[in-house]
Image (cartoon, rainbow, N blue to C red; front, top):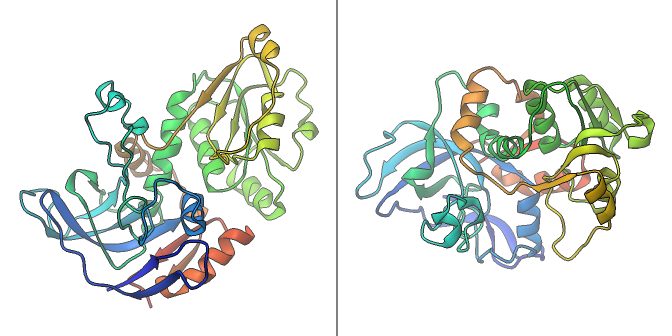
Length: 335
């Protein structure tokens, strides 16, 4: 089969689409023929060698959907031929965090496309428990968005979700706009987004946000916002956002920041204004709810701007880094 293989991250020669042996499902696993796999910031960190958990050589790709084509020993479901989305997270089940029901914080972190081969390939093996059957009629674009949406659903679940509140989101990329769509369904009075990319702001306006600006100061909301969400991981955005939470409000750190960077804020203001600061990491009992939300009619298909064949992986990475697209899906089975 053909796959995108990273042998030496951070180098041009160490990342290539090539022929590799077909994988075979082991006990408790299924073999999935990949229909599409989304490209995200985590993959950029993998390609650059900036993710400590990654093990090379590696086939990246964790936002994957496809069809089950074979079972490993002991597997009885989902049935062969079933269209599935794959939860890439594989908590150990035995560490302290798993035992207290916080598997997304697992001390022995493992994931498809990070610590084992993933979906930028024609075939991939995954634990059968990670393969979620998709309802009939769900679009190809929506199927490929289940994994990132499940992260956004977990982020939403971390918030107080009081109807009638005003939200400010930093970042008008895929994740920021997914959060915007979800908080709108949760009863937000208004949703505003901040981004420095003019194309993203124009799309955000067409996607239904109330305001899309390059500077939150232009929104002129003197009391501040009940909820501020960072979906960028950029320190300057985080610092600005923390200063725009109104008294009694909530700040959610949803974007992935550089582990080496720190942000400055006023501890006195957090105390005196009773500001809640929350974090949201990956998926937590939110994969099936994400599928259900899409099946119920949440239309996120416009977020997918590019679908490219696997052999165009270099072009996909170039477009992602240039910020000239929204969500990119690589389709290993297409020409």
